[in-house]
Length: 359
Image 1 (cartoon, rainbow, N blue to C red):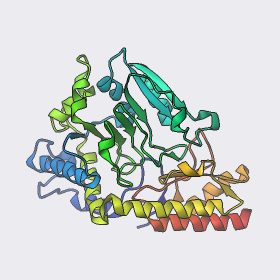
Image 2: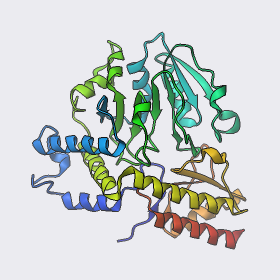
Image 3: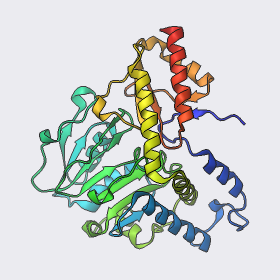
């Protein structure tokens, strides 16, 4: 069997141990004589899986008891709409910090449902920095403040939690579970699964319980966080396979030593890759050094005429999905939890060899 090093931004690499467990569980999951995909979500086995996954996630992130953990569908993009529908009335204002494409998209989506106010915007420098908090033009009575801690496309990351006197909402799709977070500083956190949690199809929402009653009375049932909180995320049939894989990933993370251990590995991976870029005259990274992402590392070749050769040769060397997002070009290495240090070392070695031959 030949496995590549997968640097995809999402759907992203899964831990190999998890893939092996999935293989072992098919076609007979837990002695049921069927796969988890065929098992009722109301069965004893699956209800136990759901409870275990929440329990393990609470352990990993030290989630306080006054927060609900939800597993809806629709990805982070649906949560961009569900956030204003659950936290703000139509005539209320919500503040948004825009430091990349996903923050911009969240602002636009919220504007359909409330008065969405962009209080900071770094597009003037192609989303390569984070505006100083002192410059943010906050609203007097915002229902909440939304930001994206890690912008997957631009590779910009907050290495601090913004100050906020109103509920703080974060799209943590590409940074969740990569390090410890203080959940108590947030009103709500949401994350698409397909980066550090599991396959696409399930979403994570962590929301402070007192905020659940802010929901608009005319919300569609499946657009209401409280409906998921009241039903243990089984308001309708959940994506059982995606939930099952997420459960395995949470167990794998605990075996690795939790998010504290992952943080040490992730910081080391990012540091050595940025060092390889910075110590080269052939590669460059456009992001301000104080807000570089640990998870998504974009880089540019000195001669973009070599981009195609770089991608072809890296693919032949077993290094895949390094093409940068179509909106920014260049290269991007996404180095989530399941991308081990060996993969990063292989990429650095290839980059040095390519520079020697083409530089």
